[in-house]
Image (cartoon, rainbow, N blue to C red; front, side, top):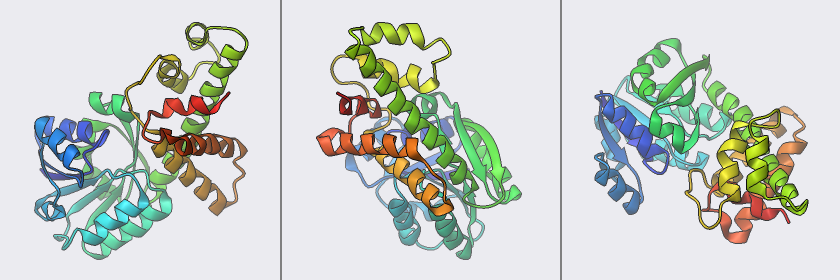
Length: 281
């Protein structure tokens, strides 16, 4: 298939590479010159022009925010009848439904398919993909989605995939915050956090987030950015909005969101989300 991949940044580029390695022809689209240069150096044809989407059989969108998704949909131009759009950004259920319906009214088939697993799993093609949409559209999307990870069908309604991702990001945010708080507690108790991490992560207190983020929390110096603080400011904010809309009480999420916001306000927004640990004394 001819695939246009919009948003070939930190996680989008390895996803696009997996699609290309599966035999599809991929064109990346991004507004950042640096991102375009990196994509081209990695072997992905890339351009800043959204018009590239009009030549594709399938358009994958992996931008950062609901506003960016709306901008892409608004500026993409004519949609060839039956063109498949796969919305993989984490934007919340309302944005997925609104923009998905806007695309459908222009003749597109749309699948809501946010992912979890981060950059590490994007590189290995082991993301978990929460796919929602008409069964025929989800089936059509599988040839593009399968190289990136495991497809979990979550429902027929656009937005159902995003709703699952909201629950997922609630847990991720709280787990990262809990790991940071616990490792700071270890230091205040006079223990070496790295040693404590090694002892507890394999037991009942362990979690995937503790094992993944913990080593970067206790490392000296800068660490690789696999998911930024700003992403979790955005994602935990989306969780809070979704919770407010359905009347759910989310006190633990509120604490985690506040710490990510504090980290961003302290100038750590572009640092790895593990660095939220700096907001604990």
